[in-house]
Length: 226
Image (cartoon, rainbow, N blue to C red):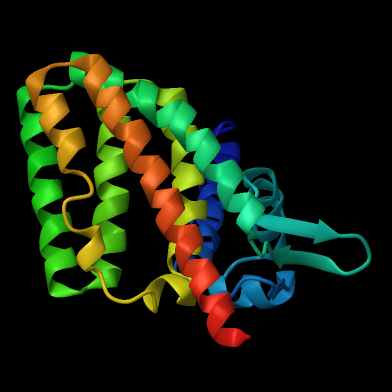
């Protein structure tokens, strides 16, 4: 019985952390919003302590900032944040793609084909929300198939951060989704060919192009505002 209480506390803390992180990812809590501990605790049906611990973890993840004497806020991402994020992703995901070729099962590689079909279908249908979900699933499937647990943990947080970026209005008003069709095809083809170097290079090129498209969308929005 002595070990049961710490276990329950840890489970509660983790659950509150995941729920707040999900609310940020879905933009139920907007960037720049102040995170009031008592309000969150009441909304989640818990005491303030698990919320305090969750906010500390989210601060370490880079999703929340703490301002002395003012409290915690959902971090407002900048273009420079995006550049840094994609720099990290290129370093980590190119290696994950190489490992996926080596370590993933035939069933996992076939699932990647299905996820790519889902991406292309949502791009064809102009469904940006579905595309974002499918994109997250595609990349995390490769991370999982690489069989490096620490890498998966890191990228889960990075992907959540990018999901906040990709839900931004500038991406949803960037002129449709036709330009997104086929963006992952080269990665899938290289993986199925069994060529680790080609798969890694295809991922690097894909992430570079994804970064360029985002920055182009931001520049276009700024032109409209002027």
